[in-house]
Amino acid sequence: MKTKFPFLPLPLGYLASGVHAGLKSNHKLDMALFCSKFPATTVGLVTTNKAKAAPAKYTVRALRAGAKIQAIAVNTKNANALTGKQGEKDVLKTVAFVAGLLKVPSSSVLAHSTGVIGVPMPMPKILTGVRQAVLRLSRMGGMDAANAILTTDTFPKTSARALWIGGKNAWLTGFAKGSGMIHPNMATLLSYLLTDVAISRPLLAEALREANESSFHRITVDGDVSTNDSVLLLANGACGNKSIASKNKDYQVFVKALKQVCLDLAKAVVRDGEGATKFVSVTVQGAKNPKDAYLAAMSVAQSSLVKTAIFGADPNWGRVLAAVGYSGAAVDEFKASVVIGGYLLYSGGKKVSWSREKLKKILSEKNVDIVVDLRLGKAKDTVYTCDLTDGYIDINGRYTT
Image (tube, rainbow, N blue to C red):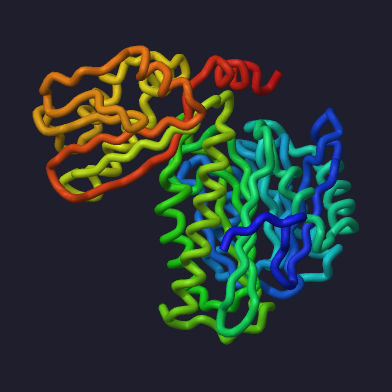
C-alpha cells in the first residue's frame, strides 16, 4: 500500500547519505551513497546507447558477473562519458576507494555518474565526497541521497511501499533522477530500488523487466537516450522471509509493489521534464496488436508538434492522428477516433461538433489525457510525456554555461 511517511523509510539493512562534494558551485548536495550492510542480490537495466559512459560499462560487467552489491556511489555534475581510458580508470579508483572505506570487496561496489558529457572527472573532489558520504551514512539519509543525485531536476523523486511477504514485514523504496535525455531504450535515467526481501536472482530480474515495461519503458521527454543511465534493483533479504523461488503469492505481491514504485518514479520524471508545464498521458486502444498500440502511442508522445501545441494550448488536435499515421501502426482514418480530456474531436471522418475554446481550456490544464481508438482490434497501451516548452530550450541551450 502507498502511505505518506514523515521521512523516507529505508528497508532493513540499508543506509544512505547525500553530501556536498564541491561539484556544484551553489553548495547543493551533489554526491550520494547507497549502502547495504549485507551483500544484495542485484539486477539491472543499462542504457542501450552504444556510446556508454564508463560507469555504465562497468555496471554492465558487474551485472553479467552476478555481483552482489553493497554500495553505490553517485556523483552529479560530471557524467564521466566520452572520457576515454582515464574515465574507466576513474571508475575503478572510485570503486576501490569506497570499498576500502566500507571494508567490503571492490566487486560489491558500483560508481555512477550524471551530468555533462566529455569532461574529465574531478577526482580529488569525488574522493573527498566519498569520504564525507561514508561518514554520513544513516537509516535517515534517504532524502539527502534523493536530493544529491539530481541534475536539472527541480524536485527529488522517491516512492516507498510496505509489504507483507512470507509472514514478514518488508519494504521497497525507490529513488530516481531524470529530467532531460529521457526516452525508453532502457535505461533513460538513474534509479535505485532497494528491498529487504529475499528472492532468487532470476525472479528478481524477471520482476524488474516486467515492472520496467509498464513504467520506465513508457515515458519520453525529448527522445534522447542517455550515455549513462541505469535502473538497479537490490534485494538483501534482511526482512527474514523464506527466499522467493517461484511465482507464488509472495512473488505476485512483490511484483505488484515494484510496478507501483517504478510507475510512481517514472511519472515523476515526466512531470519534472526539463521546462515542462504539463503532464500528458497518451492512450491508444483498439489497435490490431500490442506492438501497434505502443508504436502509435509513442509516436504521439514524441511528436514535437503535438507537444508544442499542448504547451501553447493550441487546439490543433489533427496533429495527434497525423502522428499516429506515420507511427508504423495500422490505421484507418474512417474508423479511428480522437478524444482529448474526455472531449470527442474526431470519429471516423464523420462530422463532429467541437468548440475551439473548450479544447483550448482542456489543453490549458496541468494534466492532459489523449485517447486514440483505432477500432481495429483489442490491443491497448499508454505512454507518458510532457509538453515541449521554451524552458526546455533555455535549459539545454545553456547546459554547460
